[in-house]
Length: 409
Ligand code: FAD
Image (cartoon, rainbow, N blue to C red):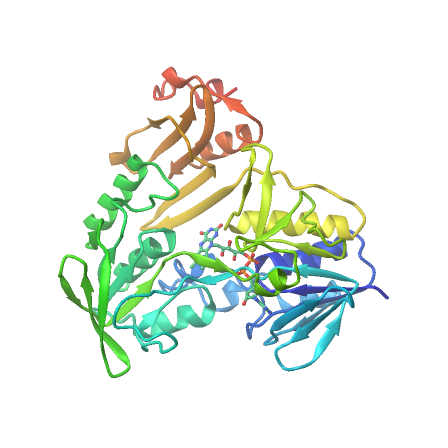
């Protein structure tokens, strides 16, 4: 009886388990993770869940019965420490070990810690939060009372979504971003400027080009954050959204990962024929963009997991999808397809003031990426077009009298 052992019970791990079974994996399947609960949706932790709009059951990726039906054994609260590739075993933190025939690494990432003067490494003030897990989100929500002074460090998606949810709960929100604009890593300046306006209009004190110099800790809590320019901001809680670090230490020691992730092919295979990997912890060569990418998104985790499941089950279906992502803030749905890095021009279709527009990132005639705000139809068209190298009629793109369909080739 062949044993498929999946480590990491998040989006990728859960999908991989079910997908391997559906594709014909006949042996045992174990889904092992270090979190206490059944696998759940992470995106709502900064959005609807934090805002109090969904309960815990609404967060589950699948009910317990779905794992029973697929004959997947769940092991929660267990942590893998090391991989012994020669003997095909993993060592667990409790001192035991488990054998595998095939191993799937779906270990995702953890938040990048805040480091600044006033913080003692290893000792975390009780009001300093990160956001990756349900437990993290519960810690934030417990302190997010109306009128609480929340300081958010980092103007990426997680920081902005927490800001929007916290405003919805009546908290006083200040957001600090080191770069001169929010979403600098992922969106063009027009989209950043739009989100800055929206947050400020909602009452967020948003400060770009601002670096944290130190924190003042009193007892076990941060009382104030001091910026490089000397500004002192008294706080009730701090949420740091500084991106993530990949959980690949064991895979690195085992010789199948680099600092940036676990390289995988289009079937999610690593360089060890007995090990696959999927999700945020992987690096995959993307033939559309001609480079190796690490993509942090639910769709990517699911698609890589399905590719791994298809290969394990003997019905290989390679994964070659366009990277895409979404973000919800203040009733605005942002959807992004493709990767804009290296774009030459950004063309807007629609007026941001109407809270419905699209931004197209082009290099010459080639469409590299697009961001859609409350424009799901534009997004679907562009995402489909971006599945191949796609050109666009750049001069007419801004003209809404011409249907978008006619402009994408
Ligand atoms: P994870 O979901 O991180 O799962 C990995 C699991 O492995 C975790 O449970 C971890 O505890 C466990 N683990 C790690 N190491 C070990 C070990 N050694 N032993 C045992 N278990 C281990 N993406 C979107 O597409 N849209 C969004 O709107 C969006 N919003 C987000 C909002 C927030 C607040 C966060 C944190 C992320 C968001 N993301 C969003 C990103 C998305 O959640 C990730 O891309 C996705 O969770 C990746 O899935 P994964 O299975 O690779 O990793």
